[in-house]
Structure formats: structure tokens, C-alpha cells
Length: 259
Image 1 (tube, rainbow, N blue to C red):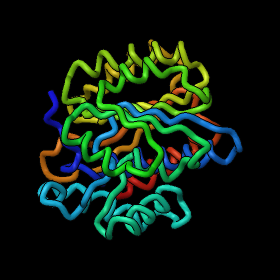
Image 2: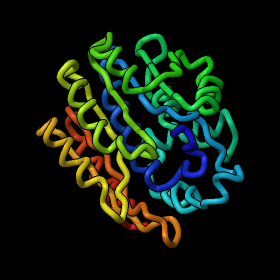
Image 3: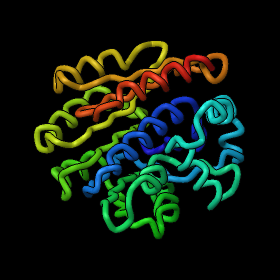
């Protein structure tokens, strides 16, 4: 149940989709001089090496960020976070969503809370986030979110990015998000999900709409990273998306569909 490690998949097209949209969201929200909370339930290790044997074995980063990065405007907040990470950690470094959040948030102004249950990933996350002002929890992330929500400050983002290696996640996460939404009705709740050839996301998105009828679904389809790979797209379900997010999501969908 704790076997998943994202190092094999870091920098793939699903990461590009979710991280670019997250970076845009945080840039939009921090443009206002009001503090916010960022909570992430499945944080991973935070920092990845795209030159590692794991990344090279799958080739997903080569088919992902390596091809997509030149298509972004250099001023995009996603590329700014990528550049800052590589300036600090080397040319093959890749930021997970915790580092993207840390880059987008304002030190001493915003609150950053992260959960990771996998022991090795938690240790790596703690090292990656040292000095970033983050609270890092070794616990079930949805339990942490239930305990923290509604947070202080109340304005903020919840990022839920599970591996879905526990198949029950497809059924349990919509209910958990619905509970959090009822406690934190002003929060921007974000859930990433994979689009696979056999369609397990169909029941997930139906359950999300049942729990939260107003939830927005932003999906991007792309060519599999290698023959036989089951993932053919990436989805971001967002409750309370800010103005302009649908347009940004549409731009990302067009960008990724062209690769």
C-alpha cells in the first residue's frame, strides 16, 4: 500500500498539466495582498532528479517536460518555479507540487502544510522543504486535511494528488472532499486524477459531481509516454476555481494535445 514512488513518473505530461495549472492558480491568488493557506495531502518527496535511474527507465520526463517546456512563455509561473529549482539544485532537478507551492507562496505571509505517509518519501520531503517554512506531517493526508480545515487563514488551496495505487481511493476521495467542502466552503479544492484507457475516472468524476455539483473538471488528453502505457490524459477537478482558470486550463489542453 506504500510502494508507490513518483520518481519514475516525475516530469511526465500529467505533471506538466497539474503543476502548470497549480502554479497559475497560486500566482493568481497571491496577486492579492491577503494571506492564504496551502494544504497538500499526498506531497511525495517534493524534489526529483530527472537524470536518476528511475526517471531514465520510464522515459516519461523525456516525453513530458523536456518536450513541453519550450512551448511555455518564460514568464509563466510554472517555468519560473522550474528555473528557480534548477538554479538551486541542478539542471536535472524537477519540482514537485510542494516546491512549486513554496515558490509561489509568500514567506511569512502564507501557510504551507504538507502530508506524506511513505517513510522514505517523507524523509526526502522533509529535506527538500527545509528552510521553506512548511509544516510537514507524516500522516494520512486526508485525515490531516479534515483536522486542519477550515484553516487559518480561511482563504486558500487544498491540493489532493494521490497515486491511486489504492483502488478504493476512486470511491473514498469524492466523499472526503465533499465533507471538507462543507466545512471549508471558501477553499479552492483541487483533485488530480489520471485518465486511463479503461476509464476508472468516469465513476470518480460522477461521484465528484454528485458531492459537489458545481465542481469544474479540466482535462487534457495526450499520446501515451510509451507503447502500452495506460495513461492517456490528466484531469484536475477544482471546486471554487477563480476567474480565468478555465481559460488557462483550455490553453494547457491545447498545448499538450499538440505533443
